[in-house]
Length: 402
Image 1 (cartoon, rainbow, N blue to C red):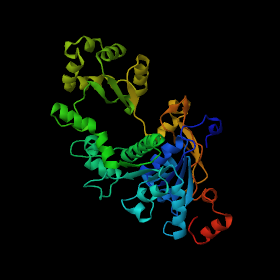
Image 2 (image 1 turned 45 degrees about the horizontal axis):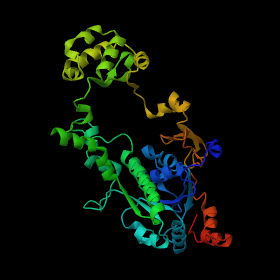
Image 3 (image 1 turned 90 degrees about the vertical axis):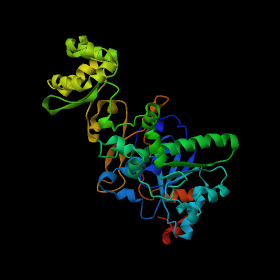
């Protein structure tokens, strides 16, 4: 946990209580954003725990990544006594967030219609696959909406749709849920009433590809998949270079092209009238790029990076995610923070997690609470709701809570 958290200035959402009935990535991301910004976020889990605690492979990082700065209470919603706890807890909240299938929360009386009768100031955030409409009954996943929403088409090579290499819709859908929650809280200051907020995977994905839809609207030409697109710039590509290295290099203006040629000693290319303007170079790409690939192959990636950084030209090494733990910029700027892992073979061990990519008043939003152990805060939260020690013991005895 961040050792500097106690000395940090007051966070903007301190004093707000968020109760989340969430799982996987989308809903937990909403809660994480609000928690990082200072809200008390209470994660309601089944008595046997959120299943993402024990996922393997690509899901192994879900729980520790998206559940920091939260408290955990474990409740059996199928138990009348447990359900009463959940309703009392949700009624005490400023914000409730959920991402279960349509109808699940209503079955338990934990939907907005039921809870708003108990607390008219409640802001209630639904994270769903689709906004209300013809598709709302469908089960959606990040990959499902990437395929039907054009993102996989744009990411893969022609005829080979490929999902993006991160849970982009889940994460951004959760972020939009948090944005909606904060907007509703602002409006509550004027009206005194809460409201229901909806954020959806499919609509999020359509927002992401909106630039390509608009490209078609403006030009009448369908957008080509990114690997096959007609680039707006001649030098804007990955180059394979000496010793098996790779590097992304770019020169996206006439001034940058001239700087690039000067830096690399390509006076002949700089003087060639075929390459005088950006559009000239784009039209000449079929012959220019092979020439550049041959010339640049004589240099290492590190040498090219040094030249481009010195001249202020855009470049990027091609890194794998695990290499970012050693990134000098992330480490120098506090972009990673240590947490204690709550589950699995490494439970109790530490790892570094990525923080939200913003600063407020010069400060990063750090880790105040490690990802919680299952039911870690059950007793304290029940006491805050008015349950006596004997009542808590009785709830535990009938397995209504854990």
